[in-house]
Amino acid sequence: MTIRDDIKKIVAVAEYYYLQKLSKSEISKIMRISRQSVTNLLQIANDDGIVDIKIINPLASERHLANKLIELTGLRDVVVVQSNPIQIKRNIGLAGAVYLGDLIKPSQVIGVGWGKTLVETVTNIKCNDSPGSIVVPIMGGLGRVEYELQVNRISNLLANNIKGNSLQLFAPGVVGSRQVAESIMTTNDVLEVINYWDKLDLALIGLGGLNNISSGDIAPNGHMSFEEVENLNKLGVVGDVCLRFYNRSGENVKVTDKWYVIGITLEQLQKVPTVVCLAGGAEKVDAIQAAIKGGFIDILISDELVVQQIIANLSNK
Image 1 (spheres, rainbow, N blue to C red):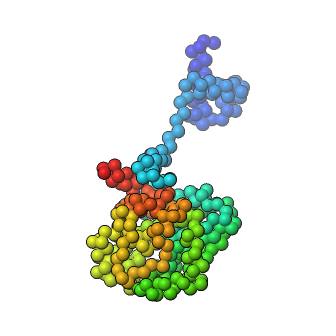
Image 2: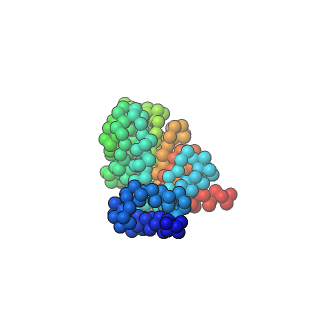
Image 3: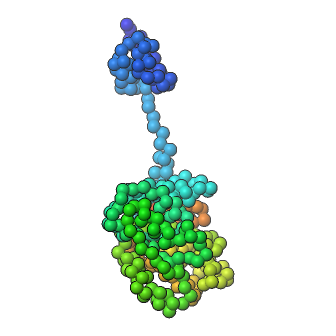
């Protein structure tokens, strides 16, 4: 048999196996050779470059974007999902659930905020049981938000899914005076939760963009007039985290004398060892970028278009 005949046999076996998806047993019958000979010829085809196997990773571009944003910002990690406007919160939530499945460990103190993306995350989280873990709300509740999005429910749901324990914060997220806020925050049940905010190992947060704030998700709610909501832009507000407004530098902005938050402060968030932010959508680009600058995000899980825009913004400076 000539070298040409050998090559023809190798190519024939490779085509049967890789293109026609035949089994080695089927090929051995067609070619009238042993199954071991088929295996040997396939190995030769790979070793000699007759077969060139390529793996096209659809996530490669997303990892490139993540690495670029990490390089520009110093974030500990970034996860990028596809920018599907119809199910962007679900995409981020599912990615967050997978990521947190590896991140959450036993005996951690975990703080949670509120919002649809966090609900998607904690609903779908699958991880090893984390006995000894305590999940606590890091803000009070909102009267005009449906029950499914309330922070106490999210806290309880996460605790159940990781086989940990949860505490409930029975307090409003915003009150109209300093005296009322201080009175609530010094009651024993509320104080029990608040005392954990300086002991957090991990915090899970969402962010509100200015559009979310103005649309009535958190304001106006009796503590802020429509005029004050309209004035947020003039005050330099670009977003909120746990009901606390901040500007492009990630600094707290006082917006009205009737807005006193019962929730974790930006300074406390900055001291949490690991803060995971789950947020996306074009309307939140400024809020996310400012939160990164403010230093109260360590890990970002967002969508491709948001990450691209932040990279462009930072690269043009």
